[in-house]
Amino acid sequence: MANPWKFLDHWADKNVHATAYDDEATAKGLAAQCLEAATEVGLSAAAVVKAAGGNLVSFLLDRLNSAADREVDRLSSKHD
Image (cartoon, rainbow, N blue to C red):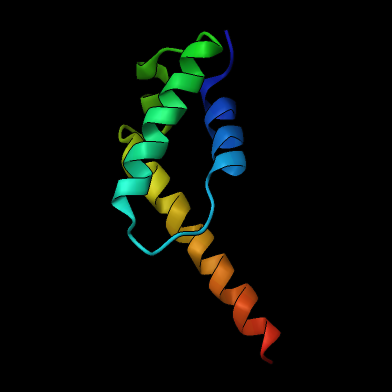
């Protein structure tokens, strides 16, 4: 069985991209996609949610917000 923490970190790095801040609809969609991908590699939904700290949507929302912050930084550095 795959390591749920490594799976989640790798999956989020690959699939989470900058959107608007606090884009909960995207976070919910990503959570569903993530759980589907986890099932395909033999991980249970419970293991992935536990790896996310108990709330997969919140975990992914944090990742989305971080991606948005990085994009803002990238765009602002172009204008310096």
